[in-house]
Length: 294
Image 1 (cartoon, one colour):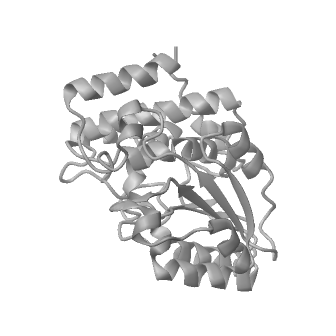
Image 2 (cartoon, rainbow, N blue to C red; image 1 turned 30 degrees about the vertical axis):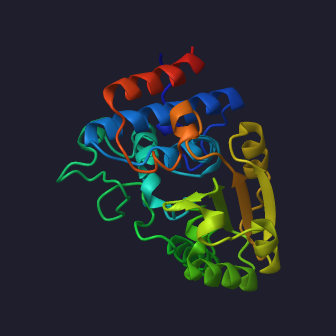
Image 3 (tube, helix red, strand yellow; image 1 turned 60 degrees about the horizontal axis):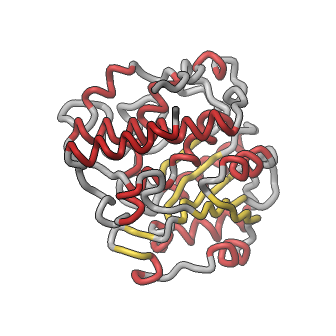
């Protein structure tokens, strides 16, 4: 099985990533799942089901939507991307390496002492990371600040923040939601990986945060609710985003399934929130994904 590598040079000009077909992006999402399995296998522990649920979102954002220059990670006019649910960094590292932010060889040390690539992203050591994450609830506030900074400095970049629905149980998130609506930060895009679970179980049992769309609208956001595994819907939604301007911010509620793409993680999503597949389980999961890529 092979998946065509990403084109780092395509974004070196400052344009968005080269437009890819939905079929390409669907394959890329499964490639992210395969690489996640490989990295966790080497590290000995990691987050499977949370990463699997947002694989299509990461695929469309990085390989179609975001305006980036991988060869110039600090380019001032790049789109910002913040990983609120930082425990899915395992699915981001292969993408950043593929796009040319750092050598592929860095992946070999993932999760080991001294490696720059850890279970949560660290902006101080990893190119392509706009803000560190680990403790949940902070990145939408930081994204708010970045969007405001873009307005003050006259830059037209957009700021994307990927959150989990479990993360929305944090009070700081709602302060940011309220402020973004007040300041009409049209360049801010919150993408919610709404898979229905937090680290301790169903979000509806821990602290209900539904109805998400109505709550964001109440704070002055424009909201789009889609199937987060539907590549066509993701492309249509992100393609339709307006340039940064003084208009309402956008919230994309992406309804997903925790563990999507592998039967055993779909059936027991909480069991595979953090874990390590045994060799037989790993091989079975890989075979299931590779069969779709034939």
